[in-house]
Image 1 (cartoon, rainbow, N blue to C red):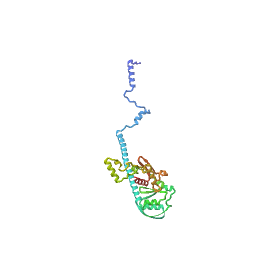
Image 2 (cartoon, one colour; image 1 turned 90 degrees about the vertical axis):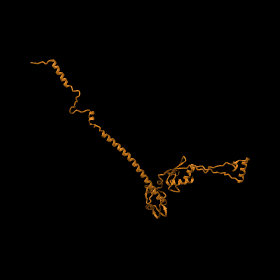
Image 3 (cartoon, rainbow, N blue to C red; image 1 turned 120 degrees about the vertical axis):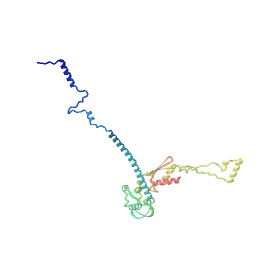
Image 4 (tube, rainbow, N blue to C red; image 1 turned 45 degrees about the vertical axis):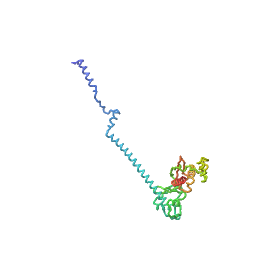
Length: 307
């Protein structure tokens, strides 16, 4: 016997089934096994959370590194300054020894190199031989020299011993023996004021001449109102001047190049118009001179004589 459900009851069952099939509003759906998650979700899962304390520590570490770098730079600069001052002191000490120290030297047909090594030994400085000597084909061990002297400075001995194509430079604790061309370098550039040297001094060519009696008579006439005034006491009041002896920049430069010459002292570098590296230029009342140390000494001495 078939039992037929009432229509109202059937409708109720259908509604209930539909309600059970729909998901809840706040429910979280889980992915099926083996499903691939979206990339955004993967990135969100793999990215670690930021730690404020760790971030602050990293910033402090970077700041500390910069501070350490800043601190080390002044220290390195200080050490560089100290080293430069030490080198200058050593150079000055060696220069005093070479220019002021004296020795007794007696050699006959001895190799130039042996004599130089002897000077270095008694003078307590080193002799350094530049590679430029070998490049120029100069072998000081085969060059001979005969020298006998007492009380000559090391500098004077060096100038006598070294061949004409050789020169030297004084460094911190050593003397560098090299070719003449390289011994000039590097040149030193100095500025000299020549305003005083160019000051014009009148040269009187018509100096006044007078007699005492004439002066007395002229004074009496001037007092009595008769005749010439005091302007005629010494004759004409006009003087003539000549500027033929005036020092001009061109004349000073010419004098320097004429008297400060390599031919008189090989420690002086040749001027540029002679094919050498030394230069002298006039700029606004000053001379800009590039020369060796001995060249500058000669220039200074000449300017002192002009002034």
